[in-house]
Length: 342
Image (cartoon, one colour):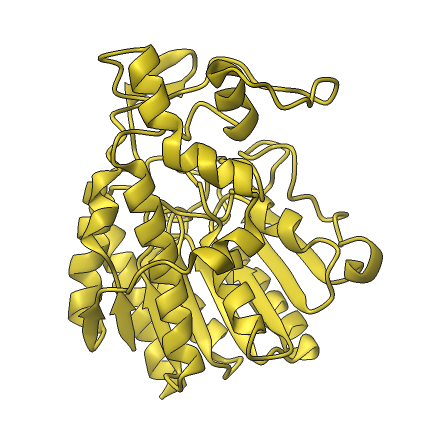
């Protein structure tokens, strides 16, 4: 297995996040990518830089005006608010107010769903590099590699067609699935991040050619709160092709093992040509968000179980935040996956 990574992804360096009404140090920071890269260098055969992002494909997944906002928003912001290093919205539309405004402050809230998704001077280059990483990992798999790991940062699975959310700007798993669909008939996305892949669900909710499965902490008490419930099964042609498997807060290895086994069984019934794994590592008992309690050995078992599908597989990095075992958890997952695929 090869790793894809681009150093431009370090450029997106958010300093703060809003938590409990206060600005506190950010957790989605370049150091998490450095820890993951060091682990990947030890357990995969090579680290390759991606080529330029395929903007035509990105425009098929994401709204053109939204992409323009991501590309130009910070430069407009810095002219209006000189010296302000972070574009963070202070208001948002709601179910009763959905019109797109012309003013920058209004657009910031329109295109960014929460206070966590911050734009900076170097964000757009990092966002494009993250997308390019996902697409190049997919290309390797379509060209015959059995699996590839895309070390994507910023992550992507919360991003909607026209809205950033939860640290995510472009939906890397959706981009990978869309690229795969250009060459194959059926794709399954299995998202194991501790937070529901709400953006991914939204993008494929009415489709029957991309199966979406998400294992995550119960959104009744854990972000993103407003999506990820078991009764969300898809709509129209997509009815029955979206599966949410919420687990309780504090879920341990055994609970996750059962949920992943169920996901694998449902994916096997769908018989995808390509599997996309949205790999969060924030289920860890050591993760600073501390939602669930998966051990390093639990990540190894998770990798082994997902390899049991025996499908060409693109692994896309999602969450997982600085902790003493972040790199060990990635190494355990990738090693378990590779050994089971051998």
